[in-house]
Every structure is written in structure tokens, then in C-alpha cells.
Length: 316
Image (tube, rainbow, N blue to C red; front, side, top):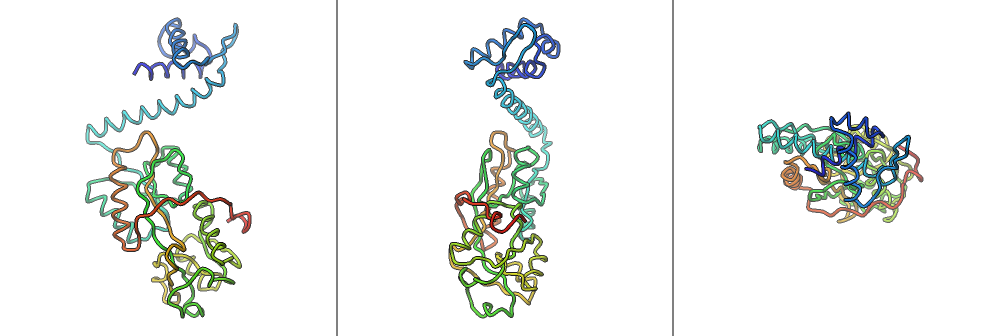
């Protein structure tokens, strides 16, 4: 705890850049404050302030420590708050982000499973990119992310993989086949979610298409399943899906792709360091629900994307 107090003293001096004002702000005398700061510098083996006759300035080491100290102190305050609420039985709802593409039946199953464990959740419909930003800002406790994604600063639960197939008009010549290869789609356009929603998945999907012989004649962006259906029905392109979109409209069909051709990988993620006490349990619960849906299976995190495909096709 003494180290946390030293960090608070350091932050006060770093923000005031004046030992006298910092001591007044902290409610202590200036000499003990100066001694604390010198002791901290000795412990860290680095000079944190340049002390001139008229001004005090942060060194480069001090600037780094200021950013880290603010984060550590904020985490400690959040930890105390969570522990206190858990002790009093006043835990807030767990704030969890889920992708807009998550099937309604899966969403309902998740909510039912959470309620069965007496877990209060605040589910928010957010893209993977939005979830990553909110997790970094501690405005979400956990997020169901689509891989590949930059997970720096995040911990991951088990990854669940769901194979994808192709949605196309029922009157398409390809609809007569029971299964398709990606190369069979050559000459067709592609209807896909906007890149901004999940850049890693977007890039990986288009890269896989190119590798397997499908270079879309055009790329149309659509997020809402109804909009996807409209684009497919109007001949703007085919779409990749788990099979649910085609069940909503008899004028389209869904055809599977070969094992390993395309898939969605999902996992629950949460900030490193100060996690909500329930996230580990919820991560396992998410896996149980997703695998219970019948189409998903344990998966691995894909390698990060190597190339931004919006350079080729333009921004969404």
C-alpha cells in the first residue's frame, strides 16, 4: 500500500509541477513529500523530475511513470469498488458486447443461461472494433469478439469456431449443387459486412477468397441480415453465412463450403489486470451456449491479417 501512496504523491507533483502546491493538495508538508519522491526515484533507479530554480519538469521516465501510475491507480480504485460491492451483494450488471450478426436464438440462449446462474448482464450490440475501443476504455467488462483481432491488453476465453457457407439466389445455376468451392463463385460479387466493423475478419475473409480462386467482381457492404438478403436477391453478389439468413427467405439457398474454407471464430475477451469477478465463468458459459447451437466447435485464434483489403476495394 505504501507504493500506491508513493504513486499518488508522484501523480500530484507531476500534475502540479510544483512541490509546494502538490503538498498543499495532498494535505502534507513539503519536506516529507520531497523525501517520498526521492525514495521513489531511488527505488526505480531513474530521475523522474528535472528540478530547476524556477520550475519543475517531468523527465522522459517521469512521463512514462505518470501514464502508468494513472492506469494503476484507476485499476486499484475499480478493484476496491468491485470487492466492496461483491461483499455487500451489490454487484452491478456485467457489461458485455455482442456482435450484431449474432443469431437471435443464440442471443436468447445466452440471456437464459446467464439468468439461470443469477448473473445480471447488460448486453450491448456492438461491432468488434467498437468493443475493442470500449474494452480499452473500461466501458465494457467483456466482449464477444470476432477473430482475428488485435487483443493487446486483453485476456481471451476459449475460441469457438463456426463454419460458413454461401447464400445465393435460388434461381442461380450454382443453387443446383449440394456444396460449393470458393472457386465456384468466380465472376460473382460479394456482399460482406463493412470493414470498419471487424477489420481483421474482413481482411482474412477476402484474402482467403483470393487464395481459393474467388476474386469478387464487386464488393457490397451490408450489416443487417435483411439488407444482406436484399442485396443477394437483387443479384449484387453472394454472401457468407452460418445458414440462418437463408432460412428467412425462400428465394435464396444456403450451400456449405469445404471443411476449413471459411469460418467465424468468436471468444469472450476482457481487460487484462482488473477483470469483473464473473468473466471467467461467463467465458465458459458462452462456449457452452455457442457449441450447443450445433454449428460451432472449439477453435484456435487465427493469425493477424497481413494486408488491409480496403486498399483494393475502397473504404466501406
